[in-house]
Length: 405
Ligand code: MG
Image (cartoon, rainbow, N blue to C red; front, side, top):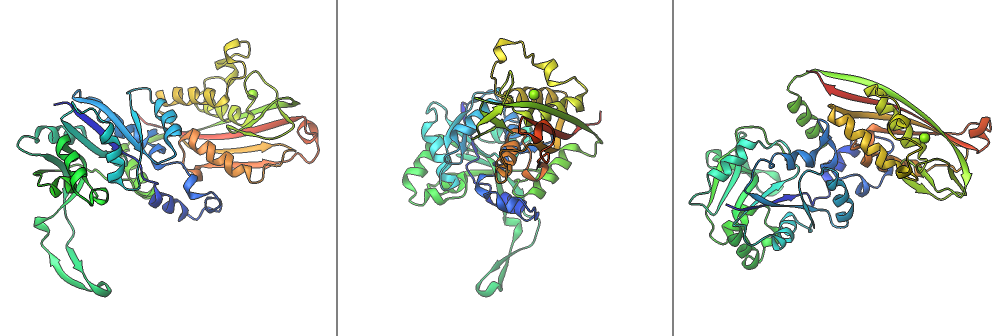
């Protein structure tokens, strides 16, 4: 049974962003909430949420193609980010205004030879292989099979002014989750014939609207939708299952000369200035300090041991690439970032508002929420090479953790 998998990740993570904002960080309200990284790239137990949601489907050989629907305008960036996983070929499609529209965009591009379509919310990273298997096994005689949870609370129907009008029999209710496995042809038909298709909130509703028979598989394990920062923290605790953590800090420090004719790279962004850091790479001093901090946690030398300044292939290389390699190596050894605290010592240019852009960029590069990335900028009061505007120095204190074995 050939199947197309569609991961719905087209949402703007607005509730998640709101929950970040509620943490009352002084800086986050200043960041445009739209520009914060999508929650699906935030780290959950050492790897991005989206990667959990992709990994769980990997053993299923009948899944022949995978689509990820991403927020409109983020296709290129997401393509780059997803390529970093380098594990499975994933096709990116533009998300729509609604979840149903996102799925429709993917569905239209999917291979018509795949008889079944499985849709999953990328924000449900904890779904188990067993549940997915059960969905596939239960499809016989049905047009669709969905994962659902029993309703445990007493359910009320409310009317005007929030007065209860009646108590609903919860025995007859389940809460629909994902994945949802549906027949491709019938789903296509629903999109074409149901005039309200694009506002239906799940695939089951679409099938129901054209008379499809949808079966329910009761979910026994925890399959939360990560909607707020709290959910992310809970999911992390669940994955850790009470295992202890080793926490280490690493320190990194780097200085580069500032010379004319070089682009000024700092924290992965290029800023306009008459000089730039001299170096074999792009000279991104902040990323070098952070990279050295990470290597400090691992006790595995420094960035110069890893990337020689004699290597012609590394001439003018972007330090974001070097940092990614160092991060990938740390993650292979089980380490994940918790927090990065940095100091930039620079007389000119004044960083001011750029600090927020750097923070945003680092948060993306490091898969950390912005409230775990600290950027501090200092001048050297006119003293020394930094004070004279001849050099930039950066320091980074990096905190990482690893599961105890
Ligand atoms: Mg350096």
